[in-house]
Length: 170
Ligand SMILES: [Zn+2]
Image 1 (cartoon, rainbow, N blue to C red):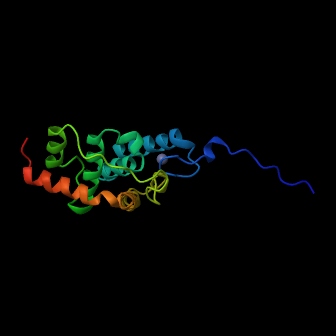
Image 2 (image 1 turned 90 degrees about the vertical axis):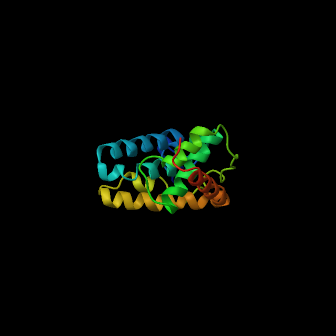
């Protein structure tokens, strides 16, 4: 009996090395999916309402790409914390914006190891047709990405407290 020939994995079956999304065609394929998701957000006000969450979720799961400087790392982590604990804002909340604009460097954060940055990934939101189901799924994705960074939650909350103390002043 001939045994089935083991096929070489096709490019599309390769997982993202950073977030672990399976079958996306590696990091490039994952980034393409992200671009598509962002594109749809710009075409739909309902989807765009969670734009900040989408960007921060994706960044937290791809820090080697989007959180390289300590400033960008602080921005994404603190913004995610703000959305989940202080209320969603489509743009970076003003106190946080002032904080990151006014400071050159921040505490350096060690990201969670690749492919262990939350069970939920871009794949779980990318193909959702209904805008309301999409935004609900993005919240779940955001929580999953945030939970993976649990060792840095206190730092994020500290940044927010400091930013709020300084207030919205420039
Ligand atoms: Zn990915």
